[in-house]
Image (cartoon, rainbow, N blue to C red; front, side, top):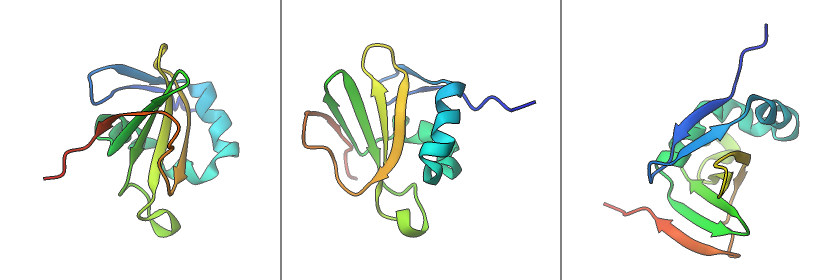
Length: 108
């Protein structure tokens, strides 16, 4: 039996965000670099460094998740604004400039 890799998590505003098992299975082949970080996706949602809203999606960014060649880059998680379903996740060096920044993590 194949384990179910879907989950529900809470984001930084208390909203429920969902990753469907079928979507994760597609990611395993399309974004294999993210597979080892599956269990870190809820942390990105709960403790993002930056959140950008654009074109019906929210883009959550968090540094400090990756290792090796992904050390110091953002893990970006894209979530549908209306349905709260994760569309994709991948590593990126930059924050998307097309949209409105709706959250910046306070630095202490």
